[in-house]
Length: 177
Image 1 (cartoon, rainbow, N blue to C red):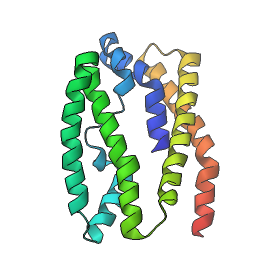
Image 2 (tube, one colour):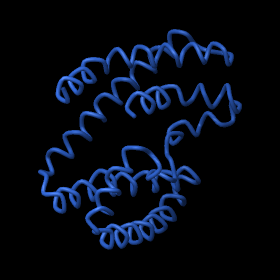
Image 3 (tube, one colour):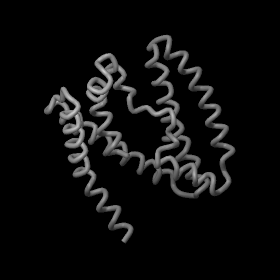
Image 4 (cartoon, rainbow, N blue to C red):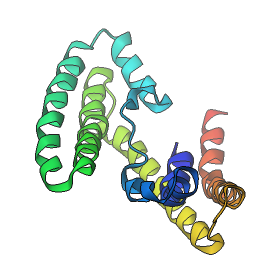
């Protein structure tokens, strides 16, 4: 996920500009926000673990409460930031649920140290941030102005990001053998 998210976030402004038009470029800061985060593969494992042990009541209640909080925060931020405030509100609430509540809850029901969950989240964030910076550098270097140049930029960013992730992937493979 770090590779895909890092490349897209680092090139979001250019992707939106070339693909949809320059009027969409201001939406780049929230372009990677997804209103359906549980459909990503990394979230399946967390929710499936809760389902497997029959511990879904608390997460369901927390999701409802955070949804209500999202509405309230969205109204507050929309007054100051317009539509961008609504997207920021959703990002904040999803981050709180996926980076704070879910690891804490899973560590309790699975009897796994909380640090292990946060360590993995941290590793993903660091690699995602590094790939984001690589993508920004590639975009600045190539300055794509067409769909074909954008594709080359994205492929180069992904290739360099994959090289960065290679040692981590090799470590994971060695750990499973």
